[in-house]
Image (cartoon, rainbow, N blue to C red; front, side, top):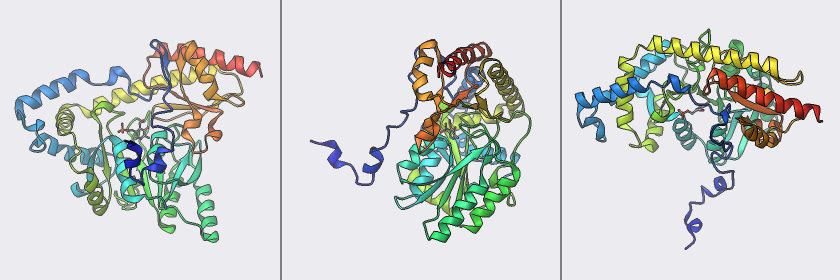
Length: 401
Ligand SMILES: Cc1ncc(COP(=O)(O)O)c(C=O)c1O
């Protein structure tokens, strides 16, 4: 029997792509992980979650362990609506779908909107898992460069105009991470936010706004695209996640979008839910002092980012440059003349890991001289030591050219 001969014709093109997660460096024990976009282990509220689970089971007994019936699980939507309200979004209950993380939200949206004829506009570079997901559905992309102020909307406009003039297919969706972007850490400037939404109206495309890092700001909140038009722009399918502010293993994300989109997404979501996780998180969110949790989290990441940046100043040769993030988990380095994917093997031997830039680009050649460092996961001592090790390697590479 040949299993492949049974595969649907629709999935065959996707299987030609690199396998999912192929970008993840193999990291030996003891290696400093500046590659990991995971929360700081000290910020994962283990005790609080444990207490929430105990309390939940005491109060609701077996209910959260069934398919349906947990009042706490049902209450999660209301809590998320309140969290979004804090970020200037007014979302009704039927405009919200809870998903297994932001990744499932991206996948469901892709499933409902994208087929092999669809052109998807993406930032370049962008979140590699989103690229993997979109590539499961289409191979037609339009890539738009990022600079220190986020998406180059002037370039987007130029490209759209050219396509329209030439009679070429226009994108149906733009996937963007406007706030503390992965991998660049950049934030889309306010006037660009207005501009991108104007282009969406003028050229009739939808915007998928991935706001996984929106709450992780160091000093100042940024208004999501979704909020810009009376607190709920119907052109924006907004994606949120608790992975970066509570814990990724809970797999809690959501989509806020026009009711008809939510209905279509629910067709495919079915009951692929985690009622127990949703109920536990709901209990936790109900009890936690949310402001205090965020204040601590923002302080920790602000300090770790600032440490990483000062170590970069001290350890990197003149030729290396980076953007200074205002939030999020990442710093994006340009290392001219160095192929960072080749350097990774040596870096891991020296005991430090990063993610090579090429994985964040559709045309991987464009990313050879870049790398992504994460300050979220490791502690201060390890961040300093990791940057020292990497600095030595890059110095040697640059000197040996
Ligand atoms: C931009 C972006 N979106 C989504 C995710 C994944 O979120 P989740 O764990 O909720 O699937 C990540 C995680 O790294 C991310 O960087």
